[in-house]
Image (cartoon, rainbow, N blue to C red; front, side, top):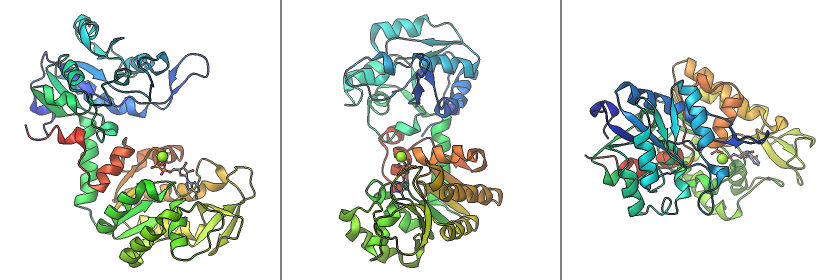
Length: 395
Ligand code: ADP
Ligand code: MG
């Protein structure tokens, strides 16, 4: 993959696929950007392009608009927010491709950053329509991919467009993501500990299988741990168990042996409710109760294992961290990541909810890398070829 520094960018129009798929809140009737992490993560590339004398033209999807243009999914408020963060002019174009977009891009003043309208307003985007990809390519001389969160999708703006430009490169964010993940997965300093949690085994089975081969230890928490516990014959009460994954879970347990750890105590309640009476149980989960967080002994064991690691990859909360009575497990593991990082370990955290949890704990700055890719990071960990990265290779 080429880098920005490999290209001559002076005076060039550079089309950048960024990931501006950010939450918008319209509580006051005016749509505003909520968590702007993804916009801030794009700044190094945008600034590098401006610094090199290029004319950046940014495109992104936002949400899942159903039938064409829908003002609720316009990137206009995102463009305004970008202008504030950059402190320099940003021009928003109401079109994404075609004559109107071309005119808007050409009319933008020197030194301005252009933001095109939502790529998903165009039906060809998710179909990776070749005619649309060509139209996108016509807007620029160079294509830069910096949307790590979208590289697992072969869409016109993430993959197709790159086939129709003469020059293409990875942006600084994409490079950073690939560098950290590759270091952790391909050349881990050991012990290498993987921490896996979250809602479903079925979402993550590929990741579990991949990490099983690479990691020295797999710490399993969250709802997925109950499928494993049940597969071992344990009592799981009303906890979430994926019955159709029990055979698979038995196979994984057999292969993993003592390397896969499961919770030995739990925070349980009668239902998934912040007001429900929460209690700690060791071993069997009583009938009628659900496991909603790892218990204090498990927290201690998992935190110790994380602190002893030289490389840690974490995806998936240890419990229903959105509700205070079930948040301690995730917080303890997040804290252990910060301590491991201080002691010199490489720590990588990814996944939409996991990132929200580490942000909430105020620890995002204290781990080595917080990935901006949810699905993309999981597929990277699985070792799958990501179309938005493959298309940048070999040129
Ligand atoms: P990520 O987005 O980081 O990949 P997931 O989407 O897989 O994580 O899982 C996050 C969700 O899993 C959270 O909404 C959390 O409440 C839920 N969860 C975690 N532990 C449990 C549990 N024991 N029972 C039910 N839901 C759980
Ligand atoms: Mg999630």
